[in-house]
Length: 377
Image (cartoon, rainbow, N blue to C red; front, side, top):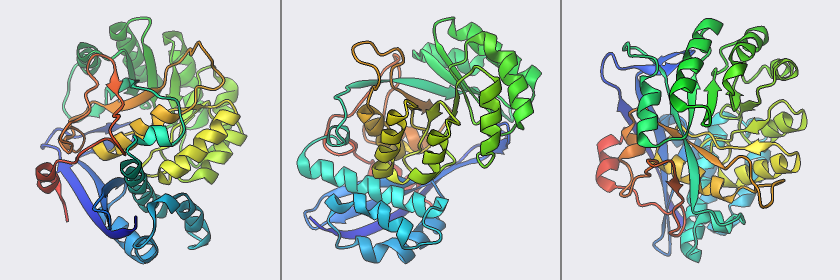
């Protein structure tokens, strides 16, 4: 089996006027990502995603990967990540190279699964999981005023038993938002918070101490991703576990987080971290150091499918028969047709469980009509 063609497909969706949403850093008005479709001489098709702008992904694929990938056996995919670091030597670890690599890598794993007739998570060597625990990623900051607890109420009505909410605009508002979420979720649900790197260490420490009474499962990106010493400072002064990963690319960036014990949870995004090959290496490092792994997902349905397959493969180490914290996957609850319409059989998190596709490869079929509807060439 050899790759014969690569098609880079930008997709986007604009939010209605006045309906912008976002985090502590500001509002966004458009959802966009880049899909990648590969074909083989055996008539298989594989899908991947680069969580980066389409023109940049197109240029990166054309300049750095196309000549090498066309004609490649997908089973050789794990060597592609190594070559991306050594050639191009000086910028192989950059976000755009790693995003393009991610899309190609995931598409190759999709092809491998289809060739072998097995879902990707079983090929990655993990345990056989049929369901995962989805957590609602919700309670965004929005342009339109709405009751603070309304998004959590909607998530609970859908059956979610875990949620992550946005904070990071000041201690008093953080407390108000966390208190409201906890009151709706109840005492037993898992509640995570995300600052999106909007704090200095001293501010993050004050916020973490103020919300600690609400039993927070983790605080995500308390400080900017480049402020590694800030992570160390926060971790030394608060009891809430710290999480990060969406703004790190490739195994070497994650190695620093893990080796220096800067976080308790690493969160590789499968459309930016280097794909499934790199994510598997990251998970192995994390498991060895007894650091939890929970993928970050704010992508299209293709990136979600890759994250679900990856999450289903991650080891429960050091747990045996009793697993205190089930494997969770992020499920964005903002309006996003790139997540809800691109697949012929969309993922359904209602009822508090997310089925892991057991069909070969990623286990998905892309809806051609929806793809054309949101295509943004």
